[in-house]
Length: 463
Image 1 (cartoon, rainbow, N blue to C red):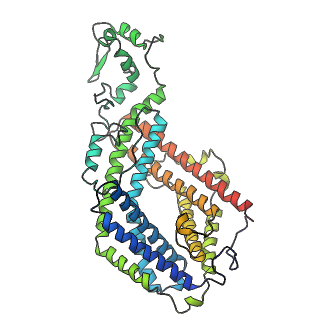
Image 2: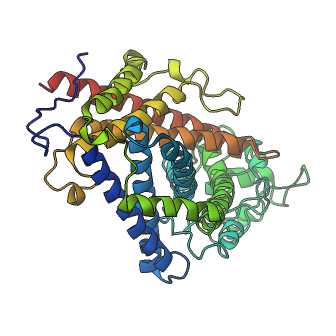
Image 3: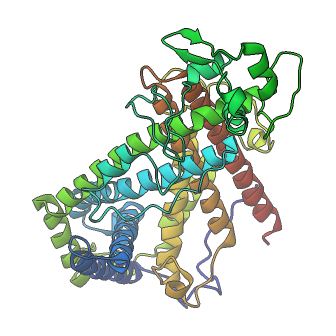
């Protein structure tokens, strides 16, 4: 695949002549100004705002902070020889710390929404869809109530035990009389109990299970099973069709799996929110903010930066990206159902998936390349309104979206696997989490396939 290097005489560029360090200084000043503006908005709405509008403004402010910090850090990395070395080496680690700290809260919320929606899709249960994740501003006191209350926006009912091994709670508020282990041993299903509600004589004779023993009513087991349509070899009438065994186990475990994931990820999100608040009030953050405030007025360039062209540095960033993509198994990723990539998907090793690291590295290099193009094009925005008349590289946009999907699905699969390692969970819960993990790993392969298709198609079709 032929590499496309940046051309100093590109007619799409806003600069007629060679782009030098002056363009880099203007870009950094613009990003520093955006950071200060977002910081002022976050201080006005972050900790004291009430209502939905205040929460949305706080989320937008935090997102703007992360966006400007990422662009400043990426520019310092790509164009490091043009900046003061001591200042750049001191600021870059602090910017990485701030960006990672601010991103964790949003990452946990998005991961929980993704997993709950996948559980709804896989189980086919008639549960309300999970509500959109609210902002964590002002939710430190309500996070515990949502976790113990069980339902996220009326979604999955929570079990009564922390490990998810107690009896499920029915959506109507009544406790179900069957544990997941009892369901696996042949206890009447939920649909059968629904049918029993219409037959009082049969309901009086339904066998119940207590402490491992069965107590049968006076009506006789055979007649009760006939009325319920569950007698062996008899497909009697039933109000609803009984689910398949696999789907039945998944439906039974989906509620507990959803409650378990909600407890774990909501707790992690609450901690991330507290960590972010502490970071924004720390002396370390104030030192970073002071450095960026100085950057808004004066950029510490080297003596030769104003006469040095930026194209070689941007071309080096692009070459690192193309080399990393060339090392990816794009031929294997070109198959929509890549079973070979799932060999280590059920490994007991809690470390990240070994095949994901090169793809995550490509995602970071793609971001650095995109930021370098922004410096050359003379703009620093990421939306159409901010870019204005600047050209948009469709290839970079679609490739970045595919890699973002890859990262989200990979982290969601890791969260499902971590939840499955919880001690003393019911077999149906572990089964549902295993199916959820496999589903997210297939989403990872789908994202790799989409990246392979978009990147190679654009490479062939672009003159």
